[in-house]
Length: 531
Image (cartoon, rainbow, N blue to C red; front, top):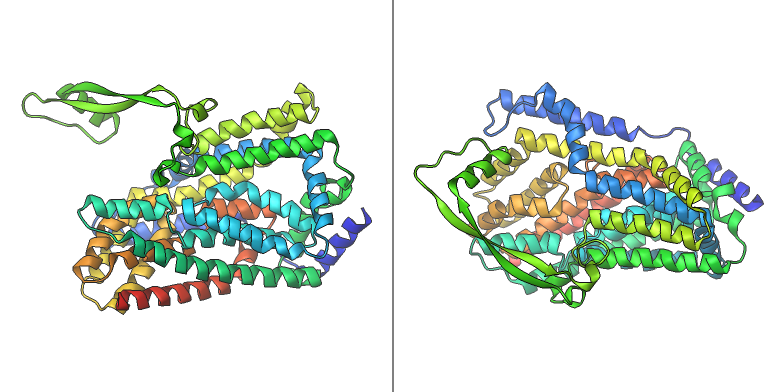
């Protein structure tokens, strides 16, 4: 306990006096700014842009919640799951044991964790799935003598720089290549892979150096923490004292050991479940699945009804129309689809929510909690994390409003027109700027590729520039924006877990992000010229 109190004092001594701006207010101002921009564009006659109505502005947070509901629900259930694990005392005891074994070598954890997160980001776009790691690494690195800015940077830059250097990521590189292939354009996938590896090495390597240098300063003298006094107080309350590792530093009991095994299995299954194994030719998790083709007759009334149900308007057809729709139906599910109905590799947030809900009560039983205690503990954790889910929903509202007003498409089309007759260096830098701006509106990597690549890819080919570099320009620019944009709700959620204000985070990391952006854009510009 004395060590925990001493740690609090050391951190607070170096803290700045003021906290940062509230995340909700930051997002609200972005939402208002989006509405104002739509009014300006509509008033000046910009094609395809409509002025945001009062109803659209007021409904956007609710529509954002609807759009982000799977992620929000996952975060809420995750809060309950982690509270149950914490109640058993196993996690704190396990972290204390790890820190004791690594005493004097704690810095080694950071590059190892960042490389692992980076590989996940590069291969399958692990980003939103990193939410729980902000809490887990926050507890571990705080116990090791760092602040939670260190843990936040480890997770964000580790996975984020991996996404920037995507190699076989099916949700960014894969979607972009498929969009061009559907239009009849050939893409040299080997060249895309090589460029991805080089970008990954630059981004991940520089991020590790940046985070380790910061962590070393904080470890040597905790007054070097970039966090404010208010943030450090919140950090101490969350990770120190009675709730912290120091108070649970005893030996692990047999029950706690089994809880940690179940805890590790929970996250291992989550990671495995998100990897699209079929994209890599792996069918292990689909074994046993049998499907059959189902042919359904379609008449004109069916088409009219489908149009109306989708809210696309009234469809009028001249004459009788008929046809067939062929779909694939699962007759026998795969062995790994037993619990959620979807095989591993085909899970998304709904399936992961089900999994963590189940494991919360499995761990409660292993940890010796009564049924009543397990339910109350779970609800306490879920309630405590609701504010973070609301941040994610409000962040999504900005993207919803930009889409409804047509701002996202207008930005893309206007930029493409402006880049139609320029040199390779100008085109490369201009394309990067376009993607940097557009990524504020479209945080989804697959959504961005689907919307933009059919426009920017053919434009690059028409001008005689390598489309492979165009793909990496999109990947890099989009990934850089996700490192700091408040419209990416997972970023603000992770900072909230870490008790770090958004403004403090920006002051700490922005110089690095700008430097990384300049270096990568320069590299891609050279590739655009020489390839």
